[in-house]
Image 1: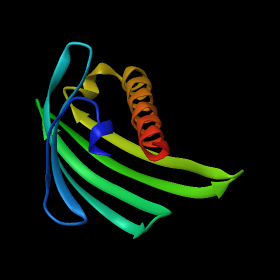
Image 2: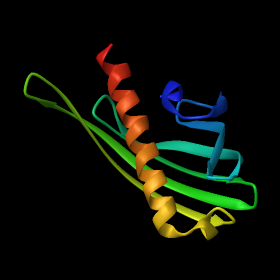
Image 3: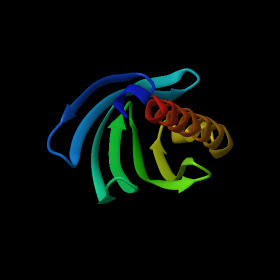
Length: 120
């Protein structure tokens, strides 16, 4: 999944379920490196995983809670996901409408990449 995260600077695996990632995050001219502490929860390999994490950088914070499910369907596999992201600080000052669109677009791109990785 690390291959699919945009602007990933580093990824350190602490254990099978915890890792630290540094990524360039932002909207428009407000960008900077964020350090994220992430943990995989509720893992039911190979069909379900939940990822929860927090990140901080450039006077802002991010809380992430997402789940991914794989289900057999029509001779293939359907990937579905749910994501909840809360942003605080200077990036949040850009406004919810700007952030929501950017966040949704980025999440969709990540999971489209994951889908392509699984297909190959």
